[in-house]
Each structure stands twice: as structure tokens, then as C-alpha cells.
Image (cartoon, rainbow, N blue to C red; front, side):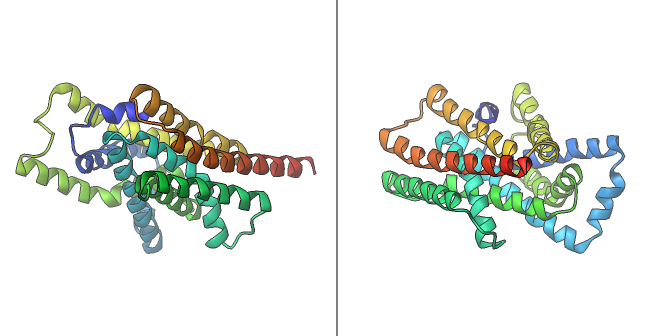
Length: 276
């Protein structure tokens, strides 16, 4: 339901919204770190060069994902944003095959091929590459891959990521205020409250995702990740009146078929392993 929140701030530039999102997320996360007594873990992570480099890359990927998403939502392209997150599981499968050299079963190959056909049809229909969807899928899949490689837990990892990128965000907000373009102290009270809420809107879903990922089966987690883009697609078509032509429906059908095949194959494999 997050598009409902960002649409209230559509008058503010996506870059400034990203800066607010990063700064207030850091505030919320550091408050949680102090409350949970995890300050030592965060400081230890900041002293490790390899961990620092990995978390810096993760923060850049996450920031890229945020920027593209907010731009897509506030420019009236929620449908394409939902497409991006529908593609994430299949992009992760492709990363596993071509980066990690994992072997794919034949249903997975068909699933990835079906999604690729859907994207190709969408490119033909749009007359150009759906760069918002592909950027969202690529950046989130890459971020998920980096988080998987990281030995740091969700709270510590997110805190380090926001700390590393926060100086850039703070500098940008200060510059915006200096030039007279910034929203702080220039918008009404309701908009200020929405801006300050960006930390909660951002941090808690990511923390809950990390918490849940450690406690439920991967097959269940994979299926649940389709809930978010499905809701976004409904919001785009029903609430915001974005067009959903027959050509676009055919493209989505190929992608959904790939997701369904991938999910069923994954679930059957998990069930067979548990029975054996």
C-alpha cells in the first residue's frame, strides 16, 4: 500500500524524497539499535573494510531502487512498478544460474523464458524498454543477493547501509534548503509529518521482511512476495486509472505464467524433500 503514501508527496522531487527517506530511516534504525543494545555490532561493522565496501554497495543498490520506485509512482507509472517486482523472483533465479552457476530444472528454464517473452512483448507494445520495471527488478535482485552474502543481521546491516549513505543525503538536503528549493520549513505541517514518517514507512517493512525471511520457508516467502506487486497493480488500475490494455494483459499473462510455474515447481521440490 506504500504508493498511497508517496502519492501524497508527489509535489516534492523524487531526489529530495530519497534524501528524506534515507535520513529519517537512519534516525529510526539508530534508535532501534540503541534500544536493542546493538551499538557495538554497528560500530564493529563500520571498522571492517570488506564489510564496509559490501554494505556501501548494498546502500547504493537500495538507494537506486528507492529513487526509481518513487519516480515511477509519482509519475503515474505504478503498473510498471508492479511489473518490476513481479520480475524479481525470476531475475534472482537468473542470477543464481549465471552468477552462482546454480543448475536450473527444466520447469525453471521454461518459467524464465515465459517471463522473458512477456517483457519482450511489453517492449514491442510500449515501443521502448520498460526501464522502470527492469531497473526495479535488477536493483532489488542485486540488493537481495548482497544481503544474502552478508553475515550481518537485518537491523545491523540496514543501520550500516543508511549510515554510509546519510552524509550524501544530509548534504543534499542542506544544499536544497540553501538554494530555496527544499521542502523543509517551506511546506505545511501535514507534509512535514509525512516527510518525517518516511523513516518508519521505509525501515519497518524492511526489518519485518528480514525477520520473517529467517523464520518461514523459502517457498512460502517466495509466494508471499507476489502480494505486494499484485496490490500495486490493483491500485494502479482501479484507484489511479492507469491504462491496462489487452496487449499489456497478454504481456503480464506470460510473466504470471512464468511465476506460477516457478512457484509450483519450487513448492513441489520443497514438499518432496520434506517427505523424504
